[in-house]
Image 1 (cartoon, rainbow, N blue to C red):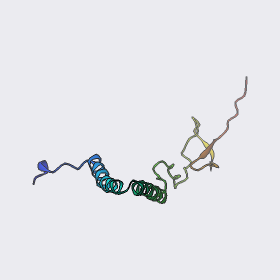
Image 2 (cartoon, rainbow, N blue to C red):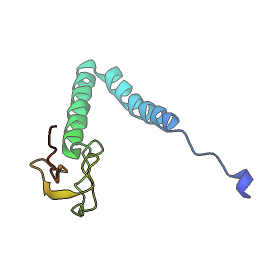
Image 3 (cartoon, rainbow, N blue to C red):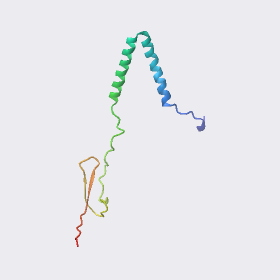
Image 4 (cartoon, rainbow, N blue to C red):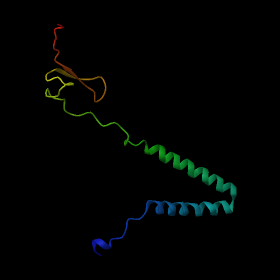
Length: 108
């Protein structure tokens, strides 16, 4: 097989449909045998699915990125000032406070 003849990746939707049918047929058989047992089977599957989801925990995909490992150097400018008086890490995570050198201007 060449690269042009590679088989396409199977669809996740098709896989989900196969799983639904594979799980639905045994549940339908239980319902046909005894409706009460079918209801209990569905409740049992719901409890198992919820417990499995609870043990998985929350995804970290929406977590804020970690703060940078390096402190900004003195060549970082605040606003349009050329000189920086000091740089401090702020109270929040990833917050840096840059203090520019103050210059006095005489009001004439």
